[in-house]
Image (cartoon, rainbow, N blue to C red):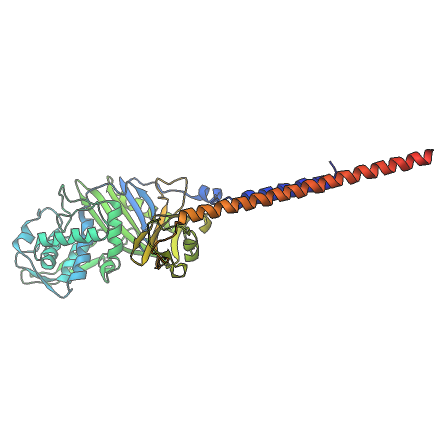
Length: 449
C-alpha cells in the first residue's frame, strides 16, 4: 500500500469515528479508584441511616424504612413541638393522667398531681433525664390533652413525609401502634435541628429544677448519654438522644457538625448496649471522612431537559429564558466527581401558564444497597409561551422526528461525499503511479534500443 493510500485510509477512519460520535451520548465516566477506596461501615444495629441534615441525602442505609419501636427518641418530636407552639416561661401543671398514665418503674422525676414547673424545666427533664412524666406534662400543656398532642405529633410527621411513623404517646413508652423508621426519625431530627434551642437542650449534661409547690428539694439529674456526658466525646457533636424499652431495645439519634456539614445518625434495635455508640461513631466517621461536597450547576440540570419535554396535548411552548433552578450540592464518595452524577428527567406537570419538571440526581456505586444511588431530587420550573394562532400546538414529536431524519440524511450524504472524494483521490494516485511507471519503461527501452 502506498503512502498516499495509507493517509487516505487513516483519514477515512477518523471521519467515520467522528460520524459515530455525533450520534452517541457521552457515557458517565467510571471511577474505579474511587470505588475501591469507598468502604462501608459495619453496623450491628438492626436498622440504621446516615443523613445529611441540610439536604436530606442518605449516605448510608440499613433497613431504613422498616417499622420499629422508637422508645424515648420519641421525645425529639415532643420537645420540637413544645418549642414551636409554647413559651419556655409557660407554667406546666401536672394532671392526674399525666402522672399516673405511665408506669412508675419507667423513667420519671417523680412529678406529682397539680405540681407546677416551667415548660423549660419540663423540656430539660424530658431530654436529659428522659422523664416520661415530664413528657406527659408537656403534651397536656401544648396539646390541651394527651390525645390532642398525639394528633399534633402525627400531623407533624405526615407534613415532614415520615409516612411510616405513628405516635400514640409523647414519651415513647411501648405500644403496638407506636412506631417509626430510621429514615423517618432522621427526617424528624433534621426538622428539629432548625428549632432554636432544641440542640442545646439535648446536649445538656446536667440540669437542676429548684423546689416547687409540691417538692421541697432541688431535683438534680445528669445525662446518661455517653456522647453528651463526656464518656464518649465526638468532635462536632450537636445533640443526642437515646432510648430503651424491652421491645425497642436500644435506640439512638445523634447529630454532629463539622465545617458546613451536619450529619444525622439513627440506629434502631441495638441488642447490645454498646452497639448503638460504636455504630454511631462508625457512621459519622464514614460520612465525614469518605464524602466530599460536589456542586452540580443549574446550567447542567437545565441542559439535561429535552426540548420536546412537554406532552403533545399541552398548550403553549416552554420559554427557555424562564427556566429556574438553583445549583445543587450533593455529597459524593471519595474518588467520584460531578461527572459521575447522572441526571434523570421525569414527566413534567403543566398548570395553566407554567410547567414543573422533576429531575433526579443519582450516582451508581458497587454498594447501592447501603449507599442509595439517588442523591437529590429537584424541580425545574418555567413559564409557558402562548399557543400558536389557532390554539393548536405543533406536534413536537413529529417535528423532532423529521429534524432527526433530515440530520441523518445530511450526515449520510456528507459521509458518502467524503468516501467518494477519498476514492477519487486514491484512484487518481494509482493512475498517476501507473503512468509514471510506463513512462520510465518506455524511456528505458528507448535507451537500450
